[in-house]
Length: 359
Ligand code: PEP
Ligand code: MN
Image (cartoon, rainbow, N blue to C red; front, side, top):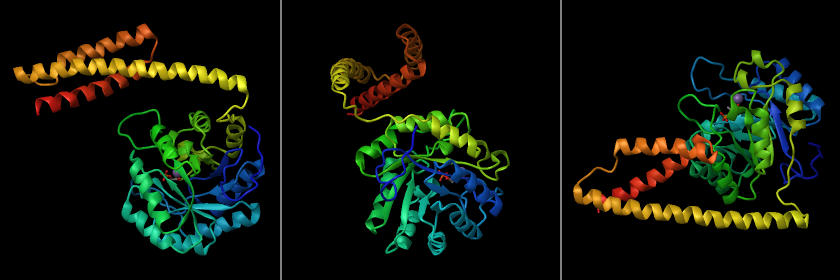
């Protein structure tokens, strides 16, 4: 990927991704300045990040260095010229960050989730010239994310960007926070003019998946990337597993491929138009088959009602699951994908039969 320096103000729609980088937390003045110096020398960073107050899930872990870190941040700016961003979660954080001329404030996922906190932040930002970025809430709710945007817009605060950092899920999983890409995509549809940044560090929770996740976000037309970088990641006091060294950051960013949303080559456009027509027609076929299935589900629902039979027959569900294994093999589709679709269809069938039984 090649870079052009932005010509306009903060996160206007550039012709290249906007890059935010820096450690999860400011730990010592030396750690912060050394990491920033190395990052600045790559020439790839637009905004330097560090957490000063850390909302940790469990107590007894490093909860941030506090306001002294804001002074270290200013030393970073003096030395490297990089603009700065820190996380704020309450009125006191806002006052201190603004007093220290932090350029951009961000609202973290554990704050976006709470309308009281977001409203407190909005009230304390009213009338200031602060620039804000809003991370998605920890739970997969587009409404809460939009709600935070609306609370800040209602008091006239400039929202520079929203940040997609994934959603909390219970149990073992590939990602630390499930990206659930459909949610940021839905946000883009609702707010097409709001720049959106991907945070692969908090989505992945490890170093191996960072590059692919960042690339995927660019393929989905995200406007930028926020990535955690530490001079010595293994010794980091927070999020050690997901932070990378500055040289690794440089390789990840340089390897990213920027694709364009629209191709203006006429023949390519034509090829796409005809393929898209085929897709539209196949989508109609898929849903007309689903509609046929639902008609049968309705008649079975009537039968169950007349004979007082429960909706869920466990043996029957097992049969469907076993059948999905055969289907996935026969059609060369991933089992996970086939079963996800089956579960959605099955849930809709249960809902329809429930309505019939309780009518
Ligand atoms: C962070 O950026 O270090 C952070 C705490 O992120 P999140 O709010 O996404 O958990
Ligand atoms: Mn972090």
